[in-house]
Image 1 (spheres, one colour):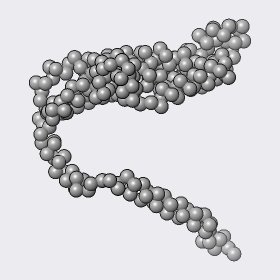
Image 2 (image 1 turned 135 degrees about the vertical axis):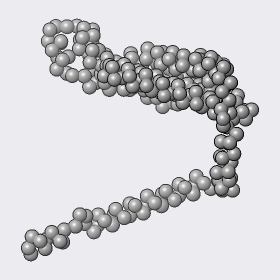
Image 3 (image 1 turned 45 degrees about the vertical axis):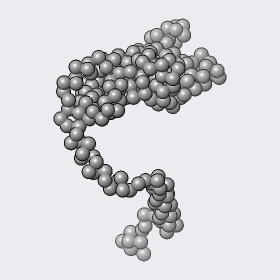
Image 4 (image 1 turned 180 degrees about the horizontal axis):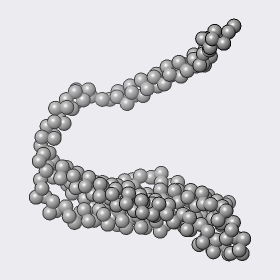
Amino acid sequence: MTVQESDLNWRHRTPKTRLLLWLGWFLLVALFVWCWDLMTQNTLWVFVSDAPRAGADLLDRAFPPRWEYMDRLWKPLWDTINMATLGTLLGIIMAVPLAFLAATNTTPSRLILRPFALLCIVATRSINSLIWALLLVSILGPGLLAGILAIAFRSIGFIGKLLYEAIEETDVAQIEAITATGASRSQILNYGIVPQVLPAFFGISVFRWDINIRESAILGLVGAGGIGVQLQASMNVLAWPQVTLIILVVLATVVFSEWVSASVRKAVI
């Protein structure tokens, strides 16, 4: 058999591999159909077919925005920004020690303190800020304090995880050089590890603040204060022009926070 003939007989996959591949695709399609049927079994399709008309009617009533309502949004908007900022700062204060306890190269105890720190990081990251707000509003009552704590608890897991991973990725050679000078453990931490993770720390913190601006805007829906309270009140009375204005204000605030976040990360990283 010549080289040209062997090339013509070459196949990318064996018949058994192709059969298994087609079987896998068939099972995937069957799973999708089953999930779709399960999710839509209680769907009233008459409402779905009427959705375009209802959506167009809602947009018609929502525009133009009620610009004179802006005078009542400045204070809630300021509360929302403060909620995100204070919650982020409080989350940083609690996350930084947990990150150093969770990192394998800085923890003083791998058997006790590290598992405890990892448990705290995973637990706080697993619960959404809206759930935290619901729990805290039921305990502390409605207001900004519940929102600040909800943002803080949610931020612990995010900041803690990214920061302890950054700590573990520090340059070992630089740490060994400082250790060779006879430096103490605290000096190794201050001069060998902290300078390396500081740019990542600033980037993570500002990025989390940017996320918290968006999350704090909706916490008012469950009574945690901020501009979400005005959004909920406007939706309850079907004041759609006010809802449109609030959405535009939130959008502008998020765009501004994104610009600040990108500028800070560019400056420090």
